[in-house]
Amino acid sequence: MAVVELQLSPLPSHVRTARLVVVAAARRAGLSDECVDELRLALGEACSRAVGLHAQHAPGTPVRVTVQDDPGLLSVTVTDSGPAAGPAPADLVDRFQGAEPDGSGPQDLVDPDVALAVVTGLVDDVSVDAGPAGTAVTMRWPLELGVAVGSTSVSR
Amino acid sequence: MDLSLSTRTEGDRTVVVVGGEIDVYTAPKLREQLIDLVSSGQYHLVVDMEGVEFLDSTGLGVLVGGLKRVRAHEGSLRLVCTQERILKIFRITGLTKVFPIHGSVEEAVAATD
Image (cartoon, rainbow over the protein chains, first blue to last red):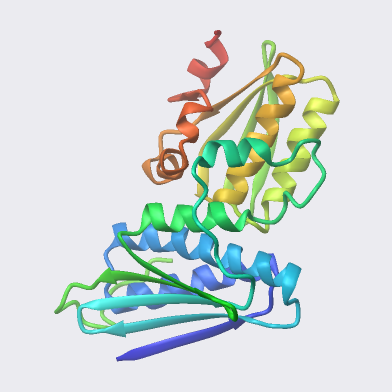
């Protein structure tokens, strides 16, 4: 088992940092290119969601991101201290079209429910553990056994 | 990679060429660009996304906001995108039903409906 753990102050610029670090860790663990693309987007959504919630509700508290690489399995968990995740919106299109009536408002922040819906739509194996202290979103991908750690070429 | 933006006019359309990453950090810049275009009376937009490397739901929200703005002026907002990894998020969110998505700028500029 190998672990990479990050703590992010809730700033939008750090979402990119998290994407870069987690993608690098996943490539090293041997995750396939196709899954890396999925991870990049899903992790970005999960972190944007957490950072947005912290910016509103817990600005002094960092968001935690953990990458755990076990034989045959990569798990990435984003843990926030915001209000517990609610049920997924029934219609994402409505949700998008309802936002931003006049160009003002918190449009720069991600809609947390939409972000979570994208994560669950993208990744086959996701668990959402929501409680009063916050929400932990864990995404898992299979790793091909035998793809040696550290021997994969990291192109970028 | 950061977000890059440029605009040019083709007939009665304004083509917005977007490159790089559209995420929670850079989406506000794209939003400002779309607002500026609509404020200056350009209501028929073609957003060329072929150079986009990353797009998240914040970026989608900005595009939907742009679409609503141009529609308020009887305008249009068409997307140019053939990249599978970018199209995927449009499909997951159902926004393929909302945006006309074209395979080339020429096709988008010529499109009427």
